[in-house]
Length: 262
Image (cartoon, rainbow, N blue to C red; front, top):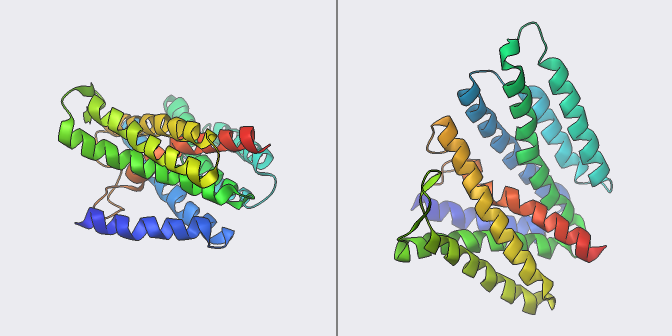
C-alpha cells in the first residue's frame, strides 16, 4: 500500500515539475534526488571497499552540475566540472591520512558516483528547459515508468524463464519482453502526440537503457550485500532503487535531442 501511495504522490509531482513549474524548481528536485542517490552510492561503495569516499567534493560537484543545467553552457560546464572533480579526487586521495592501498577504489568510486547519479539527472533538467524539450523529457520518464510497470505485471503473470539469475533472481525473459511492449505502447502513443515516428525509436532506446540501468543497480546491491540502496523512499527502498532505470535512460534523451533537434 505504501508503494502505491508513494507513486501516487511522486508521479503527479514530477509531471508538474517537468511541464509547468519554473526550471529552478525542477533543478531543486533533481538536486535532492541526485544528492540522495549519491549518498546511497557512496554508502554502498564504502561497504564494498572498506574505505571512506571523498563525499564533500562529490556532493559539491553534483550540486554544481545541477546549477550548470540551468545555463546555456551545459556540455562545456559538465565536462569542466567532471575534469575538476577528477583532479581534486586524484590529488586528495594521496592525503597522508589515507591508506594508499585504497587509492584506486576511493578515486574510482568517488568519481563514478557523481557521473552515475548527478550527470543523468542534470541532463533531464537541461533538456526540459529547451524549446519543446519538456514534453520529450516527460515522454522519457513515462516510458521508463511504463516499462517498469509492464515488466513487473508481465513477469508476475507469465514469468517462467529466468533472465539474469546471478544479478536479479526475479527478472524473467517474459518480464523483459513485457517491458519492451510497454515502452512501444508509449512510443506509438507518442507518435500521435508529437507527429514524429522517431519517438518510437527513442522509446525503444530508452527501454533498453532502462533495463540495463536496473541490472546495473542490482549488481551494485549484490556487490555491497544489501537488499535496497536505502530506506529513504517509503515502500520503495532507496532513491537509486527508484531512479536506476532513469539514470541510464537520460543519456538516450540527450542523444536524441542532439540528433533530432540540431
